[in-house]
Structures are given as structure tokens and as C-alpha cells.
Image 1 (tube, rainbow, N blue to C red):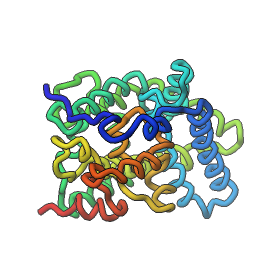
Image 2: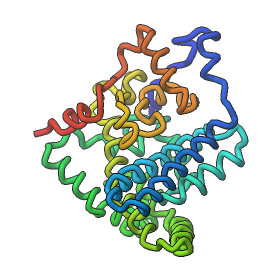
Image 3: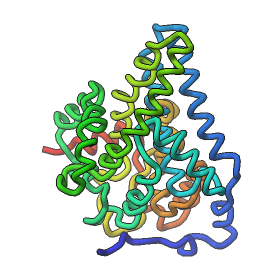
Image 4: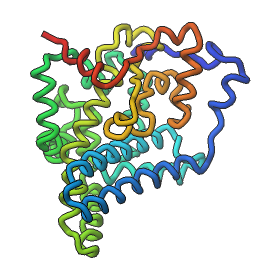
Length: 311
């Protein structure tokens, strides 16, 4: 099985240029997890106090639920803490489980994605291979996300698929991982419901946690998947084009792409660079002649137009 093409730091940078990307600050990862939950709690409080803001709060919370998944991804690379135990506790119990995932199951699957990015053995290839699709097809996918159909499929139907793994080639392994994580997901969500009941706002769990998880979260997760790998010409043969970086405005960072997830080309080039250093890495790579080969989109709307240009 051929692995994806690779680039070494020494192919681009001098030791002095590369040194800043090798250092980590122990407090940044835990602070990001705290920030993510802080934003969620503030949005929940805003929705409880001012119900007119509930639609906005659903979008904010759904995006931070994606943020938890992104921080789980960071933990899969050991990026939340240099202490492996703390990294895994934060990544699993505070990031993965609340949104229905498992760090222990996700890590080998995701590292396989990096090893075989855009090759036939890439477990995530099923997410990008169908694109471009027609606008009508993309619209149907987004409608399924926003109406909870995707959530039902992942949390119920994939539960059964997890016990017959490999029999359905149309199911991405990432979704099977979700199915295998149902029990801890239900346990943690029961605790969240209990907390809402004790606070006297039992309905907030359903409206300001479960509703975003069932609607906005699947939708922005889909947009993330499309933007990262779909319709990138030469992605299987050129390490600089293994993924796409998408320039994100402030509102896209707030509602679609938190925690620098839009810098995905840089992440595939050097996957152990912490997520908070990806903007600086982007500038450093783009300053090199090789960096001109990278796929860089002007925004998520432009990516969607490209991904829905099928016939």
C-alpha cells in the first residue's frame, strides 16, 4: 500500500526557521478546551435569558461542538498537552465523548488517514471522492443535516453498523467510530440533562445542546470535510496539495471553522505542529516557492461553489 507523499521540515526551512514550530506551551491546549466550553455555557445562558437569541445560540453552540471535535483531533496528535495522560483525558472525556466520539478509536483511524491521505487506503476518501456533486445534491445533504436526519443516521443506524464493520463500503470509518461511542455518549449526555434539570431549565438541554448537536454540528462538520479535501487536483501525488486551506473571515471562524481548522494543508504537511501555530506556519510555507503549489480558497462559499459544480 503506497503511503502519501511526504515533506520534511528541512526541505523548506532552516533549523532556526523551524524552531518556533517545535515548541509547545503547556497551558494553551487546556485553555482552548476551557474556552470552548466557556463559549458553549455563555451561549446556553444567553438562550435561557433571552429566548429570542435561541437560533443564534444554536449556531454558536453547534460550531463549538465542532470545536470540541477539532480539539479531540488535536489530542489525537498529542497536541493538547505534553503530558500524555492529561492530553488523553482532555481529548476523550471533555472533547470526544460529549459529541459522540472516542479518542482511543479515532486516533489510529485518523493517523491512517494521514499516512494514506487521498490514496485508495485512506479511510476518509469516501468523504471527498464523490465531489463535485450537483447543487441539488449538495442542497439535499445540507437539508438532511439541518433536519436531524444525519444525526439519526450516525447515532442510531451506525450503532448497528459498528458491529458489522467492513461490510458496507459506503460508510466512512469515522462514522463507525461514532457508532461505537454511543454508550459513553449517552452517559455524559445524561449527566448534562441532569445538570439542566437541577438548574431548573430542563428544556435547555434539548434546545441548547441536543438541537445544535443534531442540526448545526453535522452541517458544519460536512462543510469542514468538503473544504479540507474535496476537489483538490493532484492531492494524491503532491504533498503540498494533499489538502486545502480556506481563508476564513471572522464570521466563518465564529460559525463554521473554529480553532484554526481551516489551515488544513499546513496540518497535512506537518501534522505535529499545534493548531494555534498553523496561521504562522501558513505564512512561512507560503513564503517559500513550494508553497505556491498549495490549494488556498478565498472562503467557504467559494469552496461550496467548486464542490457543487457537478453535472
